Image (tube, rainbow, N blue to C red):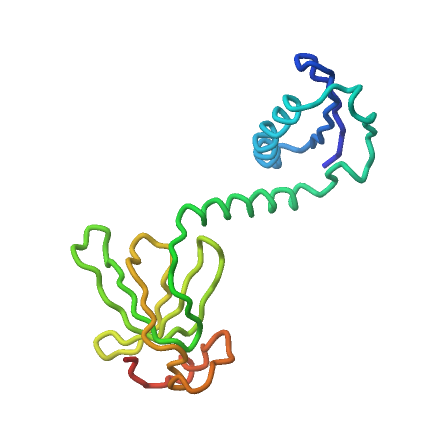
Amino acid sequence: PHLSIVRGSSRRASSSVCVAFVRFITTEAETSLRTMLLRRAAPLLRRAAATATPRAATRPQRACASTMDTRPPARKASALLGQLQKEALAKVHRPWPDFKAGDAIEMEILVDVDAPKPQKVKGLVLGRRNRGADSSVQLFCRVMGTPMRRHVPLYSPLVKSITVLQKAWLTKGKKRVKRRNLDYLWKQGKTFRVP
């Protein structure tokens, strides 16, 4: 995409304010990205024009390349996506207890949205994936005597509660578990019973 700078003055405000805005002349494939960026930037530009002080009271503004945002569109979009993910996490965040790989936990999970009673699942934490609202935990548990590996999203509305049964259950609480992921236990087919 080509870069062009559009300068405009806001004459409705008490003083004329120069607003530099970077607009991307894009192809049709990138139009949705451009409209998303323009939608997010419009309130910021309006707020800047409304709260501006008279031009005589401030230093003369110079357009300089170091103050303009010259990042490529993909970086701008990823920054906006990061902001949206933080907002989504703030909406669904629940204060779960602190646990990591090697701990034994018990989760109460609804099998279905209409289920009357949650199902209790005990298991060993094989790993934890921290991705904001998409965070999940990998459990090694037994269902009717058969070893299973379950991936459970942490902030799903079906997860009702999480309790830590024992820290560092793998070493019986004597030593800390140094690994972040315990997939080797699943691959080796270790047979042990979680409390």
